[in-house]
Length: 183
Image (cartoon, rainbow, N blue to C red; front, side, top):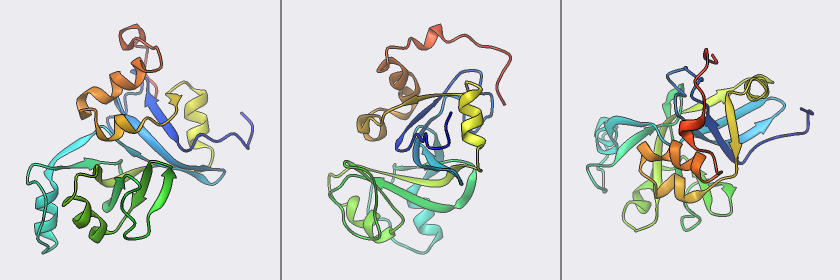
């Protein structure tokens, strides 16, 4: 792979051999990939904690559905929160991932989003790789690379995202052979 080849924005779909519990059957929205490293959010690993409980912990009133779960964006800095949403919200310092997808850290933006029908996901932590680390994992075959499909981010139930992401590429998940494991 050349130094210039980069995969963001895109999806990283873990292969079954990737046994790291943080990334088992994970689909990561790769947001940034440079020679200095990479950053993304795992879009299909919900926590067992509601967003409301996090708001209460911060002394804030949660204006949304009390069943909305926090998503585990990855193992790095789980004390940091991230919001993925569509282009409709301009509050906060939204970073454009794609034309249809923005990354934000503003709780004011989240407060506004939950009062509308606009889709969003609220994450804690992120997936991060040091210089060359992700490139090495891709070369070892730990990840299948795909383009971003916004319906997998917002519309597909978390437990179906991994399989659906493979099927949309024409890959039958049952045909992926388990091996000795990629760590």
